Length: 566
Image (cartoon, rainbow, N blue to C red):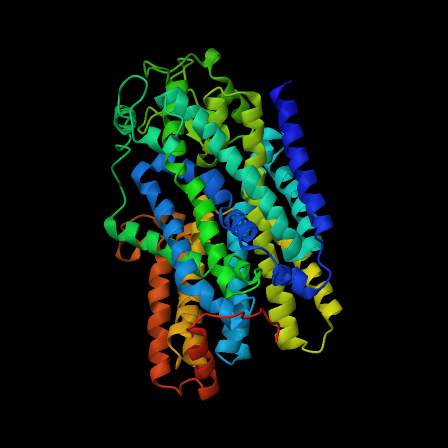
């Protein structure tokens, strides 16, 4: 059976599974649509949370960044992992006890203000659309190679799939779909990693193989350093970023994770606070399976990529004999060869000898082909890449839908609409959001992981301080929270937009504030948010006594804390 036929079978079977689950678990009420009626068991909810959180950035792009950036790529690994721990331990139980199933709902009620709620809705939509752009781009990348369609057409197909199970199933359908997607995703990530670890190191455990030696007796990291330096790159284990930028990017990813609305809402799909804690623990276990494997996948991919392009002698292979994986990916436009010296050979390097243009987002997807693994492994990776992107896209689109139908309409502009009318509004909002997300996927502002990093920075600078102060500073008032959120997100968004869109030529360390890149500026935005909120609080009245009493009660997160729309 041909590899292409296997790809069609694996991908189409996974799509049929997702759509079937959505039909089986379709939402019949707003509580089904928003929080799956709060009846999901902690283990499947942990798997769904992992799938929701481990997006295309984790599955497709993170190992690609580690492959190309080496040490510098570790900021994504540290930031996203640390952020989930921060969310699980410091925020999720308290938010669950408060009982509001969206971040704008929490902020609106905690800060007793419709203005605060509206600002939070705007922030949630802005963050979610930025994040979903990376997911839809990931869908397009997978489709363009494995289903042999244009990247833009791949995005459109992905929009259709998400439309069916997000609009029909709501959170109930998405939850059980994400359980299936996690199983596909993790199997697709670990199986090729085991194969490649065996080929390169003789060890079937990638995490151990990466820290060991190759079959030639050379330490894997030493080999990576040697290959990089011989070709004009920085040593793989050396960083090129400044310490302050490393710190700020890692911190932005951490606190951004803790402020992501589509992850927070998952803790309301379980029956009580105890189950929310258990769910967080299971999710961390399921996430760790992929995240501890990612450095090995990135490192092994780089060794194989360099050796198959340049040849074992490093001189460049004959163009007529270029590897099959290069020919396959050339059709997508995501890898190309410009024979600058006319010798008919390919050459990949980090200096002016370089003749290759390689999109970082292809590395995990191309890894099985580079290593010449069986066709069924390639097909499995294709299904896994789509599962990663689609799972997070669905969660984000639901946040956008909920923010509009519940937080903006039901809780603000149209409080008298019925449950049925609110459900219709939620589905219409989801459909419109999918259309906008598709446009952003077709016109992405950067690499998948890079785009997602911007979303985390925006979440860090807007939501995180408001949530932290809302839980641990019982006197914090609406004036401080609103002022902080506005200043934080406006500053962060302006910085990113200026360097990425208005004047990208100026996007160099010499022009950054204190040497902080756009990927890390969310940390500075967060600090500004905290500072403005606390200063404004000093000159305004503290929160009312009844609000302070509620805050005092959620500091002891025991009991049911049932999710409420009121």
